[in-house]
Length: 254
Image (cartoon, rainbow, N blue to C red; front, side, top):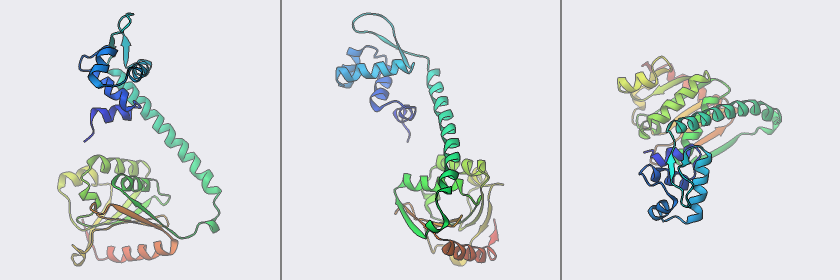
């Protein structure tokens, strides 16, 4: 679960700054009180207070030796969040412009078949999110009934992935083992993905999800094992795409 401290740190505050800011929300407003409440060292507290003041999150209330500080309007937090959003959008644009330049420096003969291995929940999520920017604008997926996507139970992750994919015009052709409840299906997939149900002979036989896109095939383990493997190979891609189409021809429309 995301905590207030996590949110503040995502806005650019350090752990110490976030702790002191939250502390001040409990009506602890002088450096002396903060030091006593947090057990932080005096220089650390004053340094954090100076940074919070520079961000506009707090202000001094008097000119005494031990200043009393006041928490600024919480609208400042919204302003910091908006700044982060604009910075992120700008970064995405810069990276989008950079990638073609980098690709031009890689000759076709240098692109050899390879296998990459990744592990950890957040790492796997990030690798999955990266497929929303695939060149082919088309992803074929095979999703088991008890695979990573259903086991991770993270609506924010699914929502972010689908938003990115739709924004970039990436379509999916998906083979699922099971149907979802109507609420989840309507929220994330209805009118967005072309979905069929896998033949019953395949049900309960595997827990690895498969993404087929560009010249890559990604294998995503169950949440219990939490890893993914990406095979970059035109030959392997063509074989898996052919297998997918063979299954698709015998699958039932969702």
